Image 1: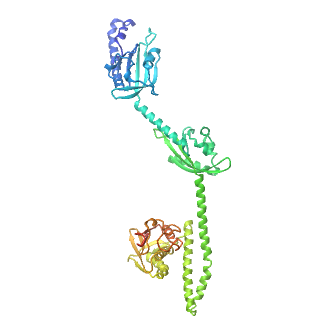
Image 2: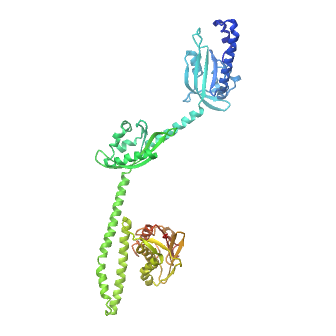
Image 3: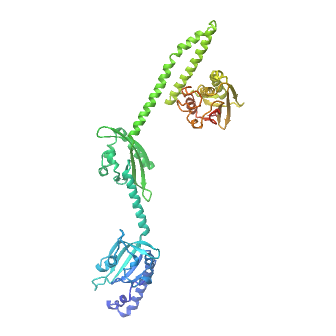
Length: 523
């Protein structure tokens, strides 16, 4: 690429250089020209050298690559190449007379940062270039004698920028139409850089007004009792880069409204905090529903506790009457009546005990009297408590206990209650004359108690909910009114308080059931 033409070299003698020094000057110029040629040939930017009439007299390899034309095709031509199909950024035609090189030649003023699209015939696609045109002036010439045009291929960069703009437009479309409020804050200045339109609906403040407020004024919108919660969330954000909080605001009418907020830190390229992104969602309706549900649950639990206490009151005199009827000289019929009353009183007592215990577990008020308990001793108590129910239906009870003595650390009374409830449940849902099997085995660091029956079984869909409070499952038998459905819920609660798990298994209706209790062994 010739950077100094022969005509330019000829002018050197007329500029006062002595003839003896001319060879040295020419040699220096040739060296300089060679250095600049190497520089131009290795540049990534395209360089085109044009004369005053716009003819191209030199270009570097980068220009050939970007424009898709060889030097032989371009030399001697002007900017008017129909096959280049030059266009502006908006896609309109970019006339040759308005190209940066031609404007610079006409005005003598450098033209910079012009974006142009040119068709590359080698690649058969359009390339986008950013152009600077610089004039070469002579003191005795009113207009440029030549022009140098330097351009950078920005095709990939422009595609990335357009993709980012499209993504930004899509993001704005989402945030401007979603019910949640989105805010972006510059962490260095503390100013909002974007506020979505939801601010008007949530706080009665437009996005523009919100951006004018500082943090202190916005904090005043938060209910006074919740400001410490908001400040704690900012402290967590500074530590962890993410924080959630729930807070209330007070409307102009005095109405309390609930909001949930999540904040995250957006870093810059070096990983330092740059923005704080905040999403705010109104949760007033959800909070009201939670309060109503909490109130309903509390009311139900109070009802259960009250019911249990009220039903227990008649039991004391009934028990006293039973004691009087135990007189051995009483007629046989009275003994029969006494036995019926005694069984019913015991059954009602167990039912009320279960209700009270379930209420205590629900409220977290139950206290376990923990000690090292031998499993066989605990099972003996449970079997004794459940024996009347088993014998009443003439079931056979098989107990399979290993010779190894296993111990758990727990409340023997509560654990015996678990055993009793599971045995009673098996007896209740097994037809008269059935088989109930109780097994104990060791599984690593746990003891496993299994109670298997030959009863009505459980449908697969009901296996998960049999332990629910007041839950009753369809057994396709005429037992729809049998029990309140609290025995298994109580079993689950007590077992979990001991760090264990309970599971129900069944091959389906008519195939019996197996209940397994896993308890950690005492070390």
